[in-house]
Image (tube, rainbow, N blue to C red; front, top):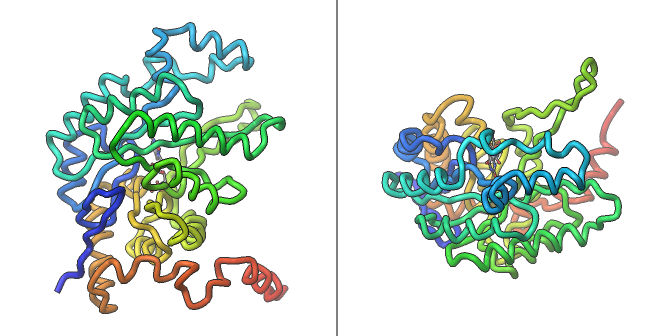
Length: 332
Ligand SMILES: Cc1cc2nc3c(=O)[nH]c(=O)nc-3n(C[C@H](O)[C@H](O)[C@H](O)COP(=O)(O)O)c2cc1C
């Protein structure tokens, strides 16, 4: 008998725990349809960015000019309106089209770091049929005068502002760079977020030593990036009344199984699909089902969190104790 893969996430009923993460993969309804056919349980659209939406709201360049004054050369960093792949209206039309054509839930995405008029787009996404919203707080602290507490308060303000705009479920996509992630995740739950996405992946600029330029680049992920997620999922599982989605580093059925065992309710994939195509959804799901059958798991619930800090036979593996043991055990 096939194992049961049905899952709940953000209150949505999903046929399995595998989602397509925020990316260009839903820019085309045809691609999204293929992902659905291959088994994806839901899709997350690419993000609309605060900067882009504020430009729209303030009708243009005045916004960029005012920011340019506060940060030398900033104007050259902002993409011009024409450089964004999708304008806000086009995005909302795309959302409506995906909702018309797909049976699986469609999650819209906003990316911003300050409270402002742009958060109204959360409501517009809801009006256009989004089943849930993912909020990506992609904030890089660069000012030594700004404390960690202030950064967390800023995040909380943005979450509260977006939450106030919508009734649909909200998930917050976080970076790993917080002093106490379990506490922060609990705070997200208290602000009304139903889920967190673990983790945002920071695109790290390289340095061109000939041109003396920082060159931004997107590198697709590898399985090695999963380890950071596994540790934090294992620590977070069961600590707050909030759903956990994993994002980053899932490339094989084994990666997917480990992520669920660590405690993820759902698992998002992007790099694998961009590299090898939509068929990989099916490869992962078939691999998961086969492994579960071979190991006599009948329901995904039996797998979820079985290797979390609360449940695994040796929780020290995720904690400081094992760090000491591993370092002491290294033979030169
Ligand atoms: C080309 C590309 C575009 C992306 N666009 C977005 C985006 O608009 N919003 C967002 O939150 N994440 C975006 N991401 C990040 C992915 O959603 C995901 O978090 C990250 O790629 C890690 O997952 P992976 O290892 O499966 O690729 C993008 C990633 C890629 C590769």
